[in-house]
Image (cartoon, rainbow, N blue to C red; front, side):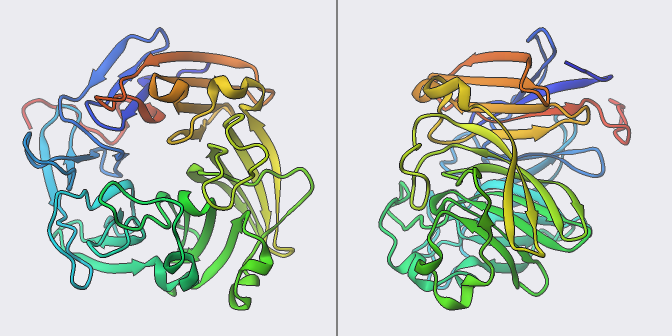
Length: 368
């Protein structure tokens, strides 16, 4: 594996403390603050983590900007009371992902406190902490998808019809890419106009209302249908062609592949041709590992600067292990670490990142 100066593998657990390891698996950095799902390096060299506001709090509704020494710079608290008629509760409003926008505001996946959960995006002003924009994804997709949804529900008993678990903001176009686990769907829309660009899902075209069919991507022969996927990222963009990477859990939640569901999980790269509205699978790794590395939930894939791919099989052996593997373009393993996990304590790896510790714009000064 190619490790640069100050480069570590960050283990971001579903709960508990995040930590980073070196090539030998030795812990070189950790935070004593419990973090759930979100761990982001900001443009100013700071970190953003999703925390509880106190040790006794039952929800992770704080986004904390901190430095590598653990000093808190800012903290944003979301109550989950954005929706009409919503109520304050112990439900976590913030969930899964946050991206920093070009204006340095934060685009956050949230639940707004209404009947439906994990289907709203909110832009949080970085200075004031106020919510300055809300996108309810029920406005973008057919009403039948949430009104008639019965496959899954949240622990609160509310309708978890979409379950947005990954965001990517394309600074070149102003488009947002997102992954929606409970529809086995990925999509793109423009952040300003909220106009859909494309949708990829195993849901048959005939099952979509006519208004949405023009947005559907057609898979080429041999292209995988995603199932319960996580970690959608944009690799490159040239004209009408996009290259993306995601972690395909390969579980048939709503529109996945029932024939292969549960047999393996994999990292997959696709090329999208918008001039033809097609999607083609160009690379994958994980299928040969079979059921041993199947994860029905969580996982992540990161394309590294050397062309290798870091893959987090985060929920392996039904919650007992997290397996992080780095492979080259030919699928040869160059890094493999297995972490024992506890379902009770939720210590499994939600995501694993290869990060530079510390970025060039971070000033390490204990006196400031």
